[in-house]
Image (cartoon, rainbow, N blue to C red; front, side, top):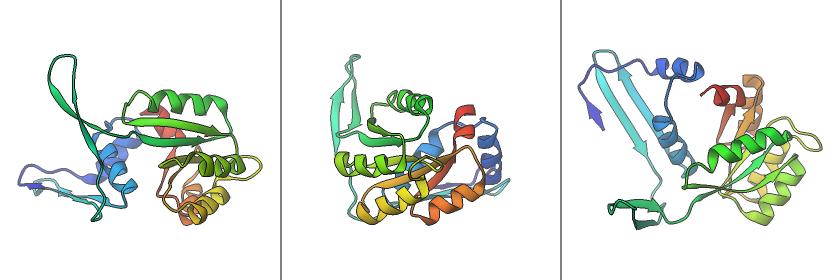
Length: 189
């Protein structure tokens, strides 16, 4: 999709996101495409217009059910919610993520784990679509757990979480995580 409008500087989205001043729309689209193995590119500059490229792999489809709302209108809704496992050693963080995620009917938290070994066991047991994996946990850290999950259950996408530095992001992404998010940024957003 493209337009010849006023355009914008895409780096400003990063700055606004870090300041908690950006919504979830573009973020949500990018995350869903990433989980499908696709990507979402933005090419824009002031006074040059904007081009959005949404790239999804062939053969990946999501079943859609038609639902009637209480107002009598018809809406498309995912037939199956995205199943999520939360792996973090802080119970309060797990609870906050569960509450935030379960506000959306297309997301369902299917389990929680307090360390990397428990995350691997729960991944085998529950077969989630996505694991939100804390980088730093006792017993086995999130980097090692991500490496094992991606080797043993490659259909599960892992998203790394940490309150620390970009070095955490690099380590967990090298282990196979599809992305990395700072819990500090997510709290302020």
